[in-house]
Length: 476
Image (cartoon, rainbow, N blue to C red):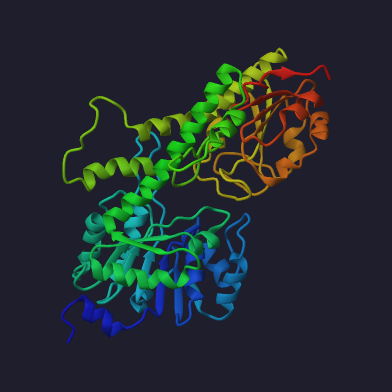
């Protein structure tokens, strides 16, 4: 008779049936990759049959990818595992009890962007559904980005409402996703995978789950809380790097110099022990992770802290300050719009503004926390008539979007590049100028166009970090 978790896992044997809760940007590619592992008999994708996302169940079971945008390899993999009947999407959460391992990949958005408190209700519901169907020897892995201390704290509490004890009756771990929309399959296979169990047995079982889907990446084992800190910190550091680039770009504009020349100069310093990694400035930071993970990390001090934080008194965290800088960039875009219009004797109020790009990442339909939404609303608040084009995003609550670019550009006073979609690089800007009103203004938030070419074509140019070119106007 089994007496501890090791015995229970030994009795279950190898992982053969896997459940993935949450059919989104993380859950879908993870599920199809699990289904391709030799020896896996079944992968269930669990999805609530709600009015907003229930359509995914039908599409996935037909072998059709509900995610839009360019995701190399995902469509073919999905069609393959559905045709082989290895993968199935269902809203019957009782099938969790059939699984050897369950992964939970449910978003943790803000309840209200003004108070910056994550909404864990959907995640907790997924954990609770797992707890209701939990059986001895099962592995439960949280992949959602969470506040450090959640796995050993609230998640464990909910699961143990089943009467089973984590570390004794079932394994529990955190293995945070590390994906970027547009290369989901590649990221899951090639990025190193951080795996943190609540104990050594849980970590070992989680490694068994993830090792087979890695092609280049390696497993990095650690504790559950350390894994939570790793995920929130890596996104916080990226946000900090972007903020540094954005702030330097603002400095360059104020001093009339080219950020990209400065960046090249800094990056040219090479040698042992020298690191000068500077990212690119832009019109704002969006997405599900970077916009909130700083606050997860900050709250970890209270949730997972075991001692008092020693930090300069009455000083704002460097990380939250970086968040403020990045949140400011859509405001700066409006400043550039106003600056460009002033050159041709116009104001924002009453002007027509064509906004190109709504998703926060190029060539995808991912519009979560997109900075374009903030920019659009500010334009409208300042009395402008704003129209938005995006080739991938078809609809968004409360905002009208167009996939036809000409009506968006027609009679516009200003063209604003907010997203670096591939098609915007190849636009015929001579044609664009003809469609727009006389003396057009172009504001480049993603370094998409060549300023000299646009200025020669007769545009007033404004660009982030382009202090050497901003407000230039040719005689064309």
